[in-house]
Image (cartoon, rainbow, N blue to C red; front, side, top):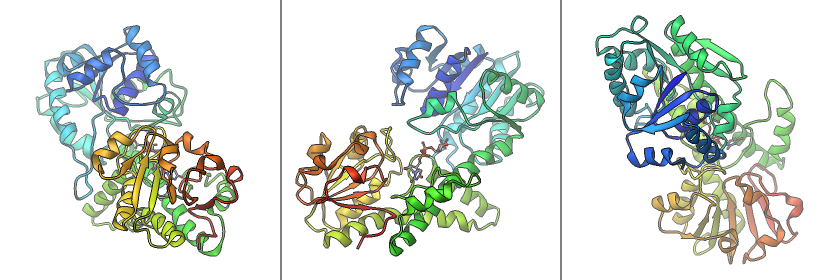
Length: 436
Ligand code: UGA
């Protein structure tokens, strides 16, 4: 099929490249000319494992191209996926300005078109947005959904860092459609994908996305609450979760305690669904607790260190891992931010290191030291906190910490193999006894 994709962030570009791999003809649209040029030159404007190689293939084979001409792209294709960002507003609700503006342009283009066209929202939007706001913008040109054009909602479940794998080999594909024709058309796009397909109405599709993310975030905060109890009674929460996770109804995934969840999705989506509840006079107490626990974990992380080192004033503390997780340069809602802020407040001298996130992090906090390597970051440190789960950190062994002045290592993400650490290293970890 001929597909246009509006927005070339990690959802739009990964989806475009993935659809092209499945044989569709894809036109990616972005307002930024540099991004468009970069895609046409097969250089991905974002970092995602495997994206560069696949982008090169699909650009070379002519299956994917990029343009700033939205109307032309809609005109030349059968289906348009809207993949623009929906960031948080102050009150937690989603900012729909980008999706509104993209939809206005799509609406004008559809108005000019004689053939059937279908618009599918892939951006994460709260239930009622697609068949409310988006539909009304699309119909402002005079054409009617269900009669003149189709409408759908097809949420993404892509994890940053492994987004391409998640796209090409998904657990499920959720297809929400206004009418039978819309649903059948979206199903055709995914015909060659080997995954369970769930066909729903539009609002259900929107809600599945939020409920999935809210439940995953809940699992993490639950693990963190259990970890606080385990720490006090001298039990390792990771061992506990290994036992709990063997129950097929629960599963072990997303039960890793640590400094909490970050990223562009979990915090934003939990806030948005909490806000939707509030608008409907429902107090989402569980979700409030999920966010509260998450806000406490970075503070708790620094407190663990403080308990071991005493006053942090003037102490050299290294934070390994500045992005919200390994495998990405994304620092949105990274737990490194509250950790570093708390360390600075307590007067520590902070050095940061991350394989890919230092440029982004230094734009937000320019005032700490940045090291060019793990070794440089650890040199003369009096303590180090491992904040994310880059592979480079999990490979560290006892000898790598020899350059430290005082070998206190707080493994926030349980990435180190304790057996490979020397006895003189004081190994601390969230959710494990022996912190006093
Ligand atoms: C998340 C979801 O996993 C995707 O399914 C979803 O499509 C995406 O949001 C989205 O809505 O677009 P992502 O934000 O890329 O993906 O990252 P995750 O791998 O889910 O991790 C999120 C945060 O949770 C990270 O900070 C990670 O360190 C933390 N985490 C994860 C824990 O603290 N404990 C765990 O057990 C697992």
